[in-house]
Length: 115
Length: 247
Image (cartoon, rainbow over all chains, first blue to last red):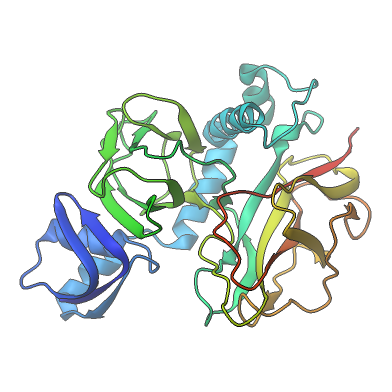
């Protein structure tokens, strides 16, 4: 497999790759997963065998599948928990205005969970 | 369903962000990724932890170091045990955090070890990133860069009435914004240096087309960064707010 690292350095579970082209002989399954998971702004795969390409593709969940999981997390309330916590963090950091009408966390989640 | 509160109004990225010059920018809303507005404390290392033991997917953090170089690290998360991202040493700012699959629990990105929280990724989402994060000024003249996000009303029942987008902070004074001509649009521009058609840029408040932002609807927002010739490096932000009334 040949990759091109597009940033100054890419680290992956103890291995480091400087910016530029790298030929990786017999990449492990773990490394294939890490390469597949890296965004296209970090690296690009220049060449790979059929089996390697299959492993790379399997390393990333499709946008459509993630969107289904997002919708499910909104229905079951788990998304609202994280969204509430992030809102409070935004207020703390000064990037959002405090809202005096915000309910407590438990009420916020319960009111938005689909039973 | 409860009345709208501020936390129901969420800013998301558009489908295509502007990391390079040669790609189309904008598109439809990407509800899996949010823009980020906070900076790490310079010289930090970062760790990632989840509220769920099932979050063991790979996670990549792209960051800029104090010397200006961009580095990236990909590691497998370890659920409720913090995973430290230190393979590239200390970083100056986080540019992007990207999960290989949707979060199962709430994922926290924080200063290592067990320090201040920088950001959280709610269940079902895939990450966050700064907008306008790799735009460089030119030695030969001024340049404009464009990026698109969306403000979404996630309340499933109520419309946000008389909805309006306005700047809440523009520390550099170099960024202004304009709204898409219609809600839920998927408009693009040719590349990050080409102005999107039909968008008027200003720093004054803008009314959402159609007056109200319906339940689950989103309005596209374009930002314009105006860099002067040889503009010095910027480590700053630009924040917008969506406001209105509710029943």
